[in-house]
Picture 1 (spheres, rainbow, N blue to C red):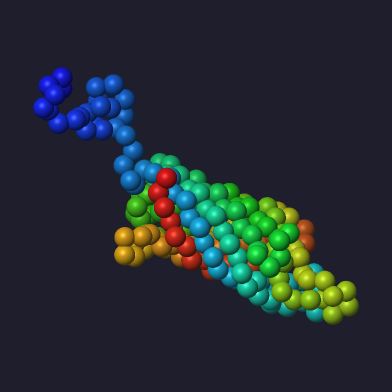
Picture 2 (cartoon, rainbow, N blue to C red):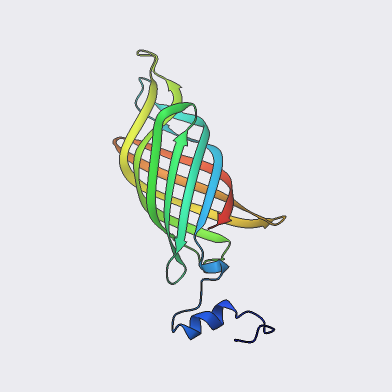
Length: 176
């Protein structure tokens, strides 16, 4: 160092000279995922309860690695055809293969509402249920042609307006 013809120092060399930890590698980076999908669930807020679909769901997920294969995860989920139906999920995801593992298991809490496309025969209103509950899911991250694709199965159960719901989401993931 100091010689104009010498190569620039690496990130690890800079960190060691400053007495700090090495800079994060790709596996230690936070991720942002934009997903689209649909789902189905139990619609009980109608006169004829039953299983009903949710045709178009958008989700934005942010995750950051923690220790031991765990990530802190936040998901904001909205329904395009029902603008008032939103849900936020916060929790932890365990990746057995570490931050770059392909498979993950999500556990967390959920807050919000889900609107199923079933209409009450008496009031002509859709079944909207929820407020607070438990969320869980399975995820798979796969590299495809230089991009990272995520496939997630997100399940929730919400109360006091009871519903059980599952979404299948496919999205593009980027490192922050």
